[in-house]
Image 1 (cartoon, chains in turn orange, red):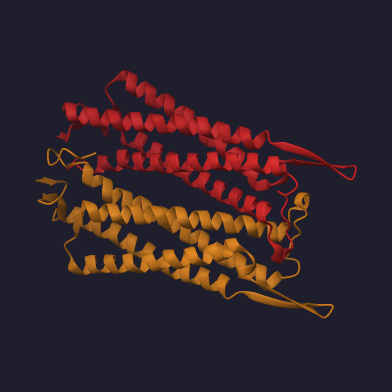
Image 2 (cartoon, helix red, strand yellow):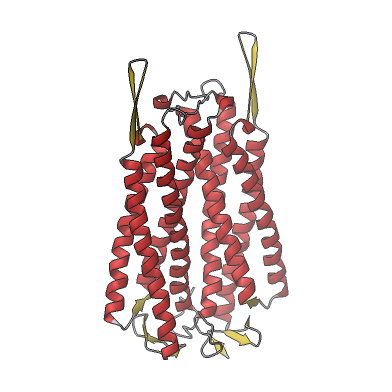
Length: 203
Length: 203
């Protein structure tokens, strides 16, 4: 059975062997996916390194004060999440490369579900971590006078700037994961579009 | 042209007129969507009300102190986002009901793209707002001693509990939006599965 160049083989597995147009478009999607995954890997590691290795020491009236990322739980969470997302992207990038080297793209529904679920979890995880870290950092930068939470960035300017760069990098990572989750949703749910009479459990 | 009960009519519009099985499954998906949208509407309004109308006054050594949600920018953001998400859900719920009353489900790619994009934006928006508000509230509850940010919930216990209920309600809203974004991704991308030779711009 074939729909739009997608042949459904027994065991719910689709092998793409359609026209040149379809193959070229399929290759473009795969390349976009790979580029996004490599970007996430690189920027995720960069963000984790920028935040994780950030520290600044100041001496005020002979009292030594050191700022480090572990002072703020949300930054620790962001470093951990960046690490998880980068590792996941590395695994997925390897899968992409293997798929592209093989040439013929083998795609099964269970695998598509795993990739879709993984990408969704990563997107929501990194977005939540970025939002929490950004919120803490805004308080750190501007303070929250109503609650007597004073800004700390006046003292640790260099430390705060580097944290800001790490968060900016994480924002780009989260945008990439959002785009990837759309690609994997497309890759999964189009398998449900033309599966005519193959299975009763198509929902 | 028909794939799995989906007829593609001119103008890129698909009308569902397939077997009873497909119609029953389609109805289940539509009911699930409607239930989720009504849940989001109800819980979003509840969360906004719980947070927005929360306040507590304490008198300490003849000094009156009042806690209100506007003291924390992230709570203001959460109230606004809950309002946006609830309003969006109301509009979408009406669309669902109209679609169900009509009986035959008319589904176009542009409409599916609008719903998918809207659901995605809502899911990421409410998740970011919940994460930021949760982060502020955790600092409010436990403090951040390393930065001399003292906890405020010891003094305003009732206020903090009500904020916690509002955030819990928002968490359920965000889970519902995540499920909805999966449903709308399914509704959109399955349209790309069986569109054989209809258009060259299927990617």
